[in-house]
Amino acid sequence: MDINKILNELKTELDQNSTAIAALSGLPMSRETKKVLDYLESNRALVEDAVVALANLERSRGKRRGRRPAWIEEVMGSRGAS
Image (cartoon, one colour):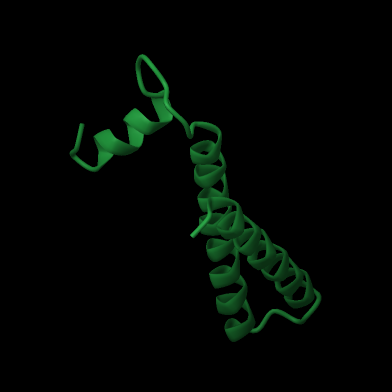
């Protein structure tokens, strides 16, 4: 699957998530509404992180010489691989 297609799908999900958060923010805050709002906000944060990571990956594609970018080293280092 193409990275640009995945990015577009994630951005669409992010827009839908933001719309849902805005709609819920206008409702009275019951416990259930608060739980759903918290879930949507955490999901939005995960999707934003995925968009940033994929955008960085897209920019770094192609044959490169030299050291890997620092953000790749951080990700690979946190997984225990080098």
